[in-house]
Structures are given as structure tokens and as C-alpha cells.
Length: 187
Image (cartoon, rainbow, N blue to C red; front, side):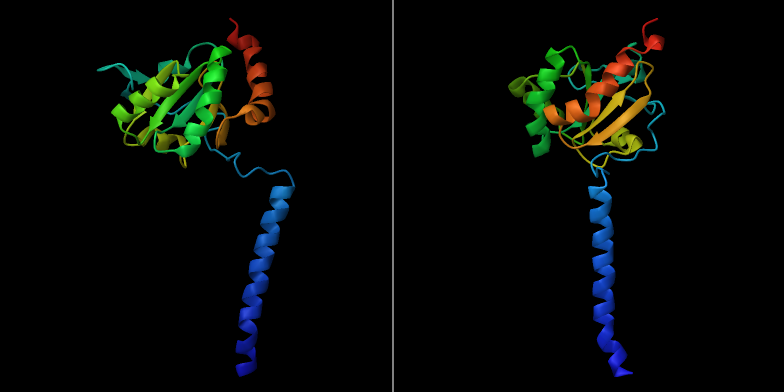
């Protein structure tokens, strides 16, 4: 009976090795852990009515996503070091006429406004989600996350992590260009 107890740590160790091996094989098979599954892909951006970050007493809602062209929805915060890392590239995308809407997530308005003054503002519109409710509705795990929204306000892709040249080229650009060429958007 005591001999069986000696093998329990070995069996636990082997089970742990199998779990790690499965995870490594899954990632090496091309599955990207930053490309999050989302129940909202293929569905409209959830309904919301939240304050504008920069315009006092103004509120913003889903009409932001009815612009007749694809756009990026970027979740960011001043407390997020990765958001700082991606901010310069977002400014570059904005200069290329890529429409970016920001969600300032669980942040303080005064800090966020100062951040944009210091680092530049790549966002056409910026939503203040101080309590994180819109982020919760979107299934946001944290900042930064970027969603690709089509011309009708439908979420087409979701990415967790910083937006940079490699991510744009490998994950967003082709789909973005396909959505730009969508005949339903060019009416």
C-alpha cells in the first residue's frame, strides 16, 4: 500500500508534462495565443452610451461605428506600459488615414488627456470607459486590445497585445483592405 503512494508524485508530474506538451504543440501548430477567440466576432459592437474623453458633456455611442468604412477600435490606458509601446505606431497608422477609435479603459480622464497631449492623438474619437463596462461587454481581458470593425459596425477580428508594424502587416492589413473594397461599404 505504501508503495502506491510513492508513485503519486510521478503520476502528477507525468500529467503536468502532458499538459505542457499539449500547449507547446498547440502554439507551434500556428495557433496564436494573442489572437483571442471572441463570441463577438461577426456581431455588432455592443450597444453603449459613454462620455467622450476629450469633449466635456458629450456622449458617444454606436453611431461611431457607422462611418461606411472599416476602422480599428483600440483599448488603451495610461497605466498600461504596452499601450505606451504601441502608441507611436498608432500615430503612424492615423497618418495613413486609418480611422482609429479609442476606448480609454479603467483610467482617469485627466491622465488620459495629458497622455494624448504629450504623445499625440491617433484617435478620431475617444470613449471614456472609466468603469470598464464597455470593455466588459467586448470581453476585454486588459489593455491593449484592438478590434477590426467593418463598415457596418460588425467586429471582424480581435487581437490582444500591442499594435506594431509586424502585427499590422501579418494580421490586420489584408483583412482591412478587403473590407475597404467591400462593395456594400462603397454605396
